[in-house]
Amino acid sequence: MKKIILILFITSCGILLHAQSNKSWSGILKAGAQKIELRLHLTQNADNTWQSKWDVPAQKALGIPSSKTDWSGSQVSIEIKAIGASFSGNLNAEGNKLEGNWMQSGGTFPLVLEPFSDTIAAKIIIKPQTPQPPFSYISKDYVYEGSDTKLTYGATLTFPNESSTFPVLILITGSGKQDRDESILNHKPFHVLADFLTKNGYAVLRVDDRGFGKSTGDFQQSSSEDFALDVEEHIRFVKSLPMINQKKIGLLGHSEGGLIAPMVAARNKSVSFIMLLAGPGVPISDLMGQQNEAVFKSVGIPQQVIDTYIPLYKNLLKTLSQADDVTQGIQQAKEITLNWFNASDKEMVRLTTGINTENDIDAFVKNMSKELSSKWWRFFANYNPEPILQKVKCPVLAINGGSDIQVVADENLNGIEKSLEKGGNKRVTIKKFDSLNHLFQKCTTCTVMEYGELETTIEPEVLAFLLEWLRMEKI
Image 1 (cartoon, rainbow, N blue to C red):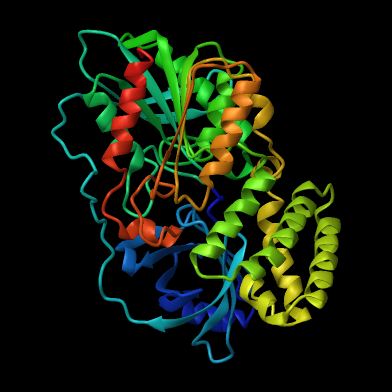
Image 2 (image 1 turned 90 degrees about the vertical axis):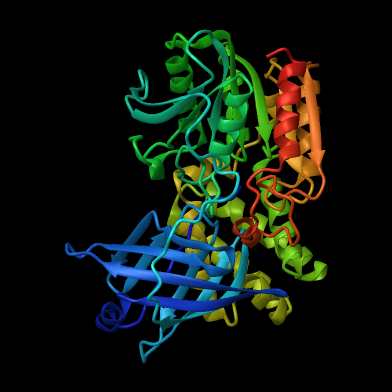
């Protein structure tokens, strides 16, 4: 669920850094009992701009592109919208190590990257469920204009044939800028969903997020509210198509998409049903606390350590995301962190934040603020889905993986069910799939790092259940 940002801060000599940067770096991330190799590839373009890619060899995930790579003096900032993490570090005096911390879902783990020679070209690995042509249905690519947003959207519509009209599902991606297939670590969940549903009689629209692929717009300056406006443009578009059954337009949202779908359904009467896959059902501040705890547990962090850290995280989340003045918010966050540091066991502090001394607090807070002060985070961190869910009157399916550590199943499914019931909605189906993760894969360690290691993109039992529900609701 968490927005996917990878940030690398280098504060050593700029000349040395530039001399060392057109190469590959490798390091072993130690998260609790787990160890995994990460590789960073930095390249300077002819116009002095930068680009970078990442590999996670154990997951067979190669050439994951960074969405943004910026230099500022001796500092480089890299964002990735695919693996939900951040890295901040420094180039040592010899120029042969990037020493820093990997941050993920509020947790911080030491990571040292060293140069290595990589002569193997990155290649895309096709997972077994990824659909391959020829297809037994029609697939059309579209580019269309939004009447209110004035943005251009790139999309693919799949539908069974041209001799009839069909119910349509508009797919809504999770957090972070993603393509129309919701691609992550060589998996293409939305392509798999579209293929399965279209083979079973449904039209499916999947769309590039604003600012990605063939869709225009500034993703960095957008929030979930803006993405909801995009969905309304997609509804207008499908209503203009002759193969669409106007009375059966539904939304299928995954993760953050499961937050956006109810926002649209609550106000747009064209929406006749919604399907929430790992969507939030509790205030996001609570969800992020749940997520942090689950992530820490998954990598073997002791419960006592977790219980000490979570209150700090939630306090910082509130302080930084609600501050009217960013500088003032950072100062308040520093004071909160310093008080916590002084009162806490130092090994526990190191395990959860990477802070070793008081001098590390400044970098820790600024790194956290860089993310939490964005428009997206300021809206997301303060959002409560409950009032909107109470306004949804159409049929709702909400499912979650029992081993999901990003949107914890029981708390969020219960929250969704209670809110819908409070609003008087009786056409509600709730289902938890045991031993499945956030992507609805059968998992072993059930960490985020495992997603790419697994061959299955979406378990067949989940696909079958989605179809069963649609037919039960006579959609």
